[in-house]
Image 1 (cartoon, rainbow, N blue to C red):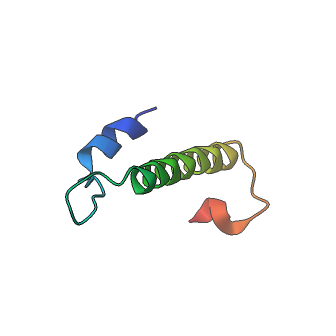
Image 2: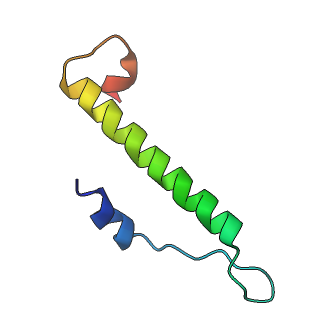
Length: 60
């Protein structure tokens, strides 16, 4: 799985409060969102690779 390679290439800015402290809640939310998106992308790719053509999503 090479998805971690392209994640490190993205410019990821750590969310901070106005005083410079790290906003851990926002950081965890952003990381969880990225993880869920990566998992869903991988599952969609697998479904399309297996020939599951029930939806038009495989053609995108």
